[in-house]
Structure formats: structure tokens, C-alpha cells
Image (tube, rainbow, N blue to C red):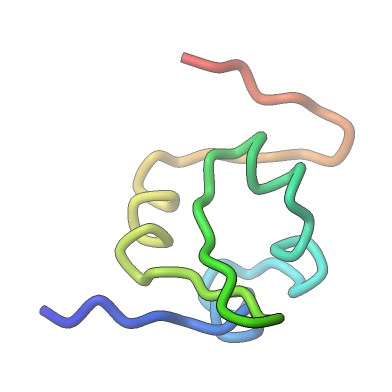
Length: 68
């Protein structure tokens, strides 16, 4: 299985989020979503996105996630 590196826009479609949300470093840190910066663009590994969805995190605006 190839672990594709998705652009911010591709990852946003994959997760149903806006690209601006994915660009927010504080949001990514709070929910535990990893990203790699290549030049000026962010890349998201497909396996990380799947793991994020499998964890079933639901992040509501203004709500902080509890850390496990």
C-alpha cells in the first residue's frame, strides 16, 4: 500500500473540513493531526488521516479535546 501525501485541499475534502482549518497549527496540535511542511505547502499522509478518522475525534468550535 502506498502512503500518499495529500495536499491541504485534498486532505480537507477527505476529512470534510475546510483547508483553512487544516492550515491552523493550533487546531492540528489539539486534535493530534500530523502534517509535514514541504516548502510553503502542507502535506498530510493518507494513513494519518485514516487513523484520525478511526479515532473518532469530533472537534466542536470552542471546545477543547481532553488528552488521553
